[in-house]
Image (cartoon, rainbow, N blue to C red):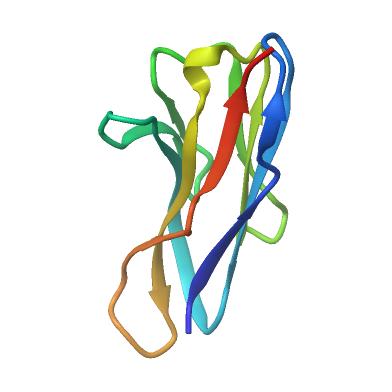
Amino acid sequence: QVQLVESGGGLVQPGGSLRLSCAASGSIFSINTMGWYRQAPGKERELVAAITDGGITTYAGSVKGRFTIYRGNAKNTVYLQMNSLKPEDTAVYYCNAYIIPQTNYGRDYWGKGILVTVSS
């Protein structure tokens, strides 16, 4: 069974940094695009950043220049380095990946989400 597990969230002061990690596990044939979404209270889920298996990245305008997305050497992990955090970055962050399992069709998979709180 394919799953995504996030780690690294928590409470940080404005201006601080956090790094989120997400690891895919299970019977995986290949992983295409991986990314991070977030959902703040009362708002819709939005794309934060994504990276293709070829290394092409996309960022939301609100995080460009502050956040960096990258994949691990094993290609089944994705990281989100978040610097210069602002209170408006407070949200539940979700890992997303398009995965083709060994014995099924490819589809989007989601992690359970991890809370990031930016507050003094």
